[in-house]
Amino acid sequence: MQNFWPAIFFAIFGAIFGSAAGALIFRLNFDEKIFFDRSRCRSCGRQLRAKNLVPIFSFFFSRGRCAFCGAKIPQFFFIIEIFFAALFFIFAQKFFGQKIFFEKISLAIFAGILLFYDAKFFVVDRRISLPAIFSAAIFAIFRLDFFDFFSAAALGFSFFWLQNFFSRGKWVGDGDADFGAFFGFCVGLKNFFPAIFFAYFFGAIFGIFLIFFRDAGRKTPLPMGAFLMPALIFFIFDGEKFSAIFWKIFGI
Picture 1 (cartoon, helix red, strand yellow):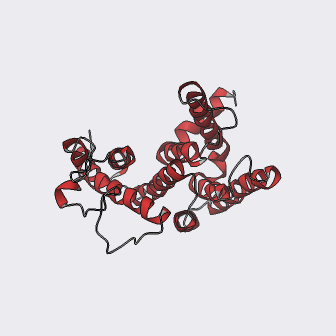
Picture 2 (tube, rainbow, N blue to C red):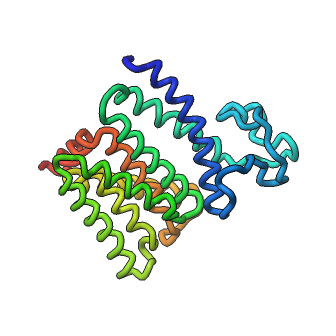
Picture 3 (cartoon, helix red, strand yellow):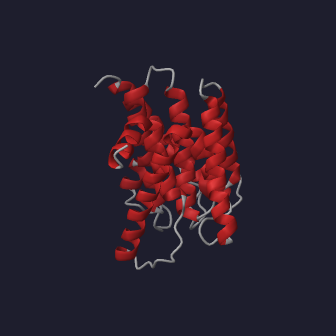
C-alpha cells in the first residue's frame, strides 16, 4: 500500500474539490456568479453555513435535506464529491511522486467535470471543454510522439463533427466534437480506437440499463460524456492495459 497516506490526503482534497466542482457546474449552467458568492440552498435561497458545507458528511448528517427549509438536496452533489474523492485517491495511490502524476490527475479532473456537466444538463459547456482541450494539447506538445496525439485529436474531432453534420444533430450534439478533440489529445493515436470501443461499450450498457429500468426507448437521447469520459479516465489511468485487452479480444 505504497502512497496510502498521501492518497488519503488527496482523497480528502478530492471531496472538497468535488463540492466546488458541483457548485461550479450549477453556477455555469444557470449563469450565476462563480466567485465571491456564498453557497445557498437552491430551494429557499438561505445562505449555507460552514457546517452545511462539509463534503460528504453534511449530506449524511442532514439526511439529504436543507437544514432551513427541509427541501431535498440533489444527490448530484453527494455523488460528485464521492467520485472526486475516489478519483484523487486512486490516482495518488498509483502515481504520487511520479513526474506524470500532475498531468494524469489534471486530465482526469477535466474529464470528470465534463462527465458530470453533460450527464446533468446534456450540454457541453465550452467554458470547460476549451480549457480542457488547451491543457491536454500543452501536455501533448512535450511528448516525444506529440504528432500522434495531435493526429488523434484531429481524428476525434472529425469523428464526432461528421456524425453531427450528416445526422443534423440527431446522433451527437454540436459540442461533442470537443469531447473528441480532448479524447484524442489524452489517449493518442495508439490508444484511440480501443478507447472509443470501450466508450461505446459503456454506452451500450448504459442504454440497455435505461431501456429496462428507466422506461427509456431506443430514441432516448444519451449524454455522450456519460460514457466517453469514464472510458477516457480509465485510459488516462492505464491506457496500455486496456488497449492490450482490446487487441486481445480481436485477436490482434
